[in-house]
Image (cartoon, rainbow, N blue to C red):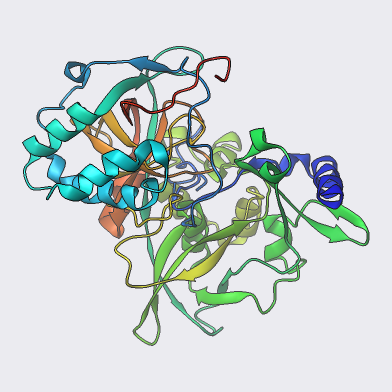
Length: 414
């Protein structure tokens, strides 16, 4: 324990900028429509799919949860809840191990899930409803989107496939601060040893320039460095291999450096207008300025490492550790909303005034998803989902559904 405390202190001093929420699955770095970052050029809802990290699953105060009535929910009677039911059952595979959720999950297992009205009655009878408020006041916040992209690649380095996806390097140190300080349960420190000193881990620029000991850690090679960057932003994806097979990859770890938006970097230098700093706008700029691509990518020091995932799961794994469901899984800040919980979302569709009102499941987190009313909407797999995710930067409101006997704490931690 003394050694762990010393290491944590050393890392905190040497790499205080590396203090960050334990990244999770799928959730993504925000999109590139900065300054208020949307979902394309942003860190993992997905958005990086990893097993459930150590995150707080009980709100520590009620000051951001305002009791609400079911009649307050815009669109509640219109939503086809049968589309959300499989995602809720996925949440229960994890939540049923917690006392507060055991009974509602057991009852869900007894329901056949057929009929939206039966499901609606189940939630109204067994759950209490709370509107989520911002810490600074107000009920509106940013809703972005993420997706699972498709790349082309190979398991071997070739002239065509020469940009590597890497597994975590052996010299990457990770300290779970929750083992020392329970109040820091969702935070980790990352660094490396330099002799007998602990220093920050290598930046993206260092890694891509070959200054980090990563040879031999490659799990695949792809043909496009820009698509690889956005795979890191999304946090998970699929690779169509040159032998005809499909590889699914997900978030494994991160170098500990904070995410910096390359969309904002381009805007600040007058390279792109703000309204053009979308995921597609960044890709177009990169392809017309190949000589400046290393400079652009190095502007974001954060670097994501990957692992190969089972190809047979239904969707990428979110931070909860269950497959994500297209258009029903949501990345949230777990300090405000318990992972696995049902959440009612009231927003609009990308670049539209059309209402997007439906029951979602908080199954993921992301490096850019911070704040009580802040969410990343998982659109699914492929090019069409990517277009929606890249365009999504909407204002929205959130309502949290909790079992009626859920042990909420008051402002004094009781």
